[in-house]
Length: 154
Image (cartoon, rainbow, N blue to C red; front, side, top):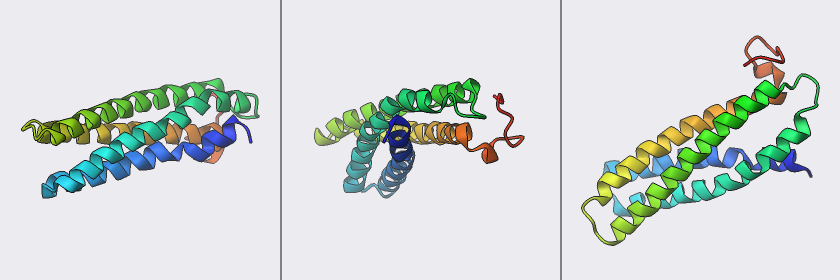
């Protein structure tokens, strides 16, 4: 098992995790259900933590595939930039979730507002991570590239 294999195993977790956390937190906020809100915030934290293995194995995965036929450095770099952006936004959402949990514990009136902000940032992270996943898929899966596989496509 190499870094590319590990990366392929773990890279879907932050995408699905951020979507799950968004839905859970969103339902909790809509229903004004403090248990669901807490669960959603914990899910955002978990997604942030579980994003680390995908981020840490990305560079090793790039080294494994960079010399394969029809793999261009431009595709790898586009994926890498998008993944890093999504990673940091998800980490920001996790930080907000932690702060929201502390405010909820202390019954702060600002907890609801910060939980709503966490929801928005989590939604943004999901979009960015889904885009990064799509760009990552294009690296080896020529069939999903626009123009069906021009190797230097941006």
